[in-house]
Amino acid sequence: MTRPFIFPGLSTRVVFGHGTLAQVPDEVARLGHARALVLSTPHQESEAQALARQLGDKAVGVFAGATMHTPVEITDQAVAAFRAASADCVVSLGGGSTTGLGKAIAMRTGADQIVVPTTYAGSEMTDILGETSGGAKTTRRDPAIRPEVVVYDVDLTLTLPVGLTVTSALNAIAHAMEGFYAPDRHPVTEALSREAMVAFRDALPVLVQDPQNNQARARALYAAWGCSLTLGHVTMALHHKLAHVLGGSFGLPHAETHAVLLPHTTAYNEPAVAGLLRPIAETFGGSAGAGLWTFAKSVGAPLRLVDLGLREADLDRAATLATANPYANPRPVSRDGIRHLLQQAYDGECPAAAHE
Ligand code: NAD
Image (cartoon, rainbow, N blue to C red):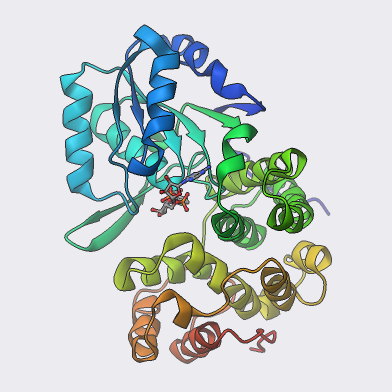
């Protein structure tokens, strides 16, 4: 029987291809704007400067201070630069950190956003903004946060280091994984998430050997789009909660943390939703959790929280924080269960499908 669903519609315009960076000036004009502030991290400043030159008189400057977890102090500086330059939109060139800064500016100024993603993290299609202030990270959802235009240029991902290629892809797969059992999933997220699993499975082993492989880069970026769309349209659960706790309260790196947790959070929920996670099991082989762990290992992903800087003494507090407030999850979230999950992720063991 066809499951009832609500499809909220898609509001973000997407341009996907090779060399599409050249279309950014037209996209700015298409939105009716003429004064773009280009955003990047310090690491990608030269690319941002080149894009500003390409925009010519449609660019009013570059702000290259984007950083992980969108600290409000940086946002304040960027908003001041946006206002001082009388900018009328932002062009965010980079990964999730740069996209986050663009969203934070948009929330404060109403600016339209054009995002040019260069990782697979998947922030560009979402209405989600995480910000840090005084060491605490808060996340909110608002339609005003969702970017107006996303320009995917495969060529820009050729420089993504192999390590970040792998962890960023697993970060994206985590969006699809939780999308499969999200209560508000719909056929668009289900279909794209299925396609994304297969595309990442095929592309990642190629990219580990040959990071410049154009076809595999295209497959991976296409998969990232599907996962980002899923993240932006459905409700996330245990996996994203745990990643948020480990990143926000223990300072663990974003993509790597998602990568390590993914097989374990999948295995935790699998007994409750094995049928819904079947696309993952079928794609990667074995059970969904063990299949993801084996795949992650085969592409050289980090497997142990200890390697990301977490201390074993932190596991109790992490389990307590992750279970302090109730939230919807397909399998009941117990403190003992999460403590066990974290221990397995800390040690890097292949997760066995847990039983309720
Ligand atoms: P990132 O944006 O911090 O990028 C990591 C580093 O890689 C940076 O120095 C960046 O300049 C560099 N880099 C990016 N693309 C590159 C390329 N193609 N070649 C060479 N270097 C490149 O990392 P990320 O994992 O993309 O993003 C993580 C951040 O995104 C976190 O703050 C996370 O909370 C946020 N995020 C938010 C959402 C959302 O929906 N709100 C979704 C996913 C991630």
